[in-house]
Length: 594
Image (cartoon, rainbow, N blue to C red; front, side):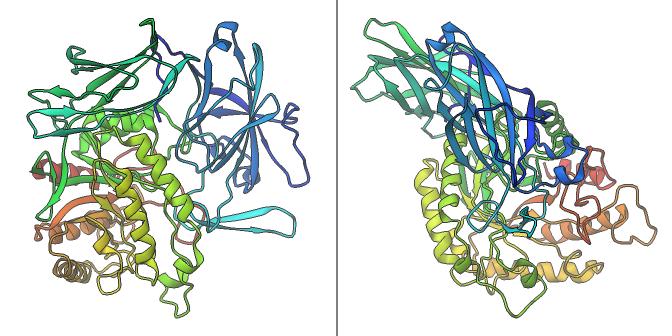
């Protein structure tokens, strides 16, 4: 799926702004043909939750509506019109002028649809009915019950706030009615000197020929090729290739133009891409045949007021902060991030572990963590396979041209120690590898109780991803024991899988900014500092540890809980991006590691 782009043949209209918003009560039947009554203004894109003062509305579980209007000119009506949502969380049904146009399940990937049969010249009404309910069929996973009052109550099987709304831009773009480019996949092979580019271009409609041109980063033409409709596209060559890397984020462009029988231009689109190789060898991550140590964070799309809403200023500030501290990587925990963020990661030379929202794949989670004897088998209870494959397909299709993406994370903290896990993830990993022409490494961060003696899926993955909290959830306030236990576990993993690198995908300790203690008490900035020093001392002894992604980049919002006072405080930075004491130690460490 192509990101909307203005060109000589395409127009893009952004519907961002204030929309009307209304919570759907169970006793109320809302007619999509009638203007919403008693609505309130709501900014788009953004989560709706933190724009609202009323607590009951903020924490509403169920259905809610957005409405806006847009105008179509006679010129625009003569073109093909497509409406595109960057995301809508978690399910969306779209109505134009009272008629249902589209339905999409999944809150973190884009979807689009033709609207020509539903629009008119002049003003048009657009409504979206959204749903934030979760179940054992959805990703992320949750549980929904219907109360005696008729209201719903949803509990997410994960430790972050279940924001909802239209989180990413809604746009209308136009193409020719005659023919249009649906998708461009820039496939290539490279020996790190010469690169052979063999694009796959999906075109619908009637056309005669297609022109392909590769441009360098400055816009200079490198090579052009043209083929007729019934011919196989020829390859293009880049000699003396500028390789994409963290210290040299060089981006090429592939310009595609579609012509009719009179050699008149029908459609054109320019796709950026970078050339790099990724492989796992000798317990190392290799970028362009050279080992690289991943330094960075797990993160969340979460910022005051806007929640998970896409905001370019926030994205830019976060990336600048990552570069300031010396990070070179992040994981899109626990869902695909916005396309705008991925584009900037390409430009900034940041490595991305691209994660789908397969979080919460663990039935009876609390009982399991407490060591309960009676646990529900996750893989007999979950019905997520269809949703899981859908979001993997949508994520790879969306992100396959991003050189910043170096791994696919197909799940986070699943019950991989339970019977049935291997069968489930064998199907998932096989499916992912069939879709990905690059065959990027696969990872699935392991929950603490999925230890080497019981885990059943490590053979299916290229990298061992560990979420470990020795010194916090385990061995609390005993860093010496935490070091020993961590070291012993790592040695066991390495003995069982001597060719697989280990990347720490989560480790951390809750820390209240401004809390200090001469005794280094837990929750103090001093304890956080000692905690990370202890963990790093173990990592630095082991050459098969290939990366450290701390949990987390910033403090973030969670549902209220006994150990969640105003959110999760494991951030190296506060919720509003101010550094805690540990940030300066990390900056020194990562400069030395580079």
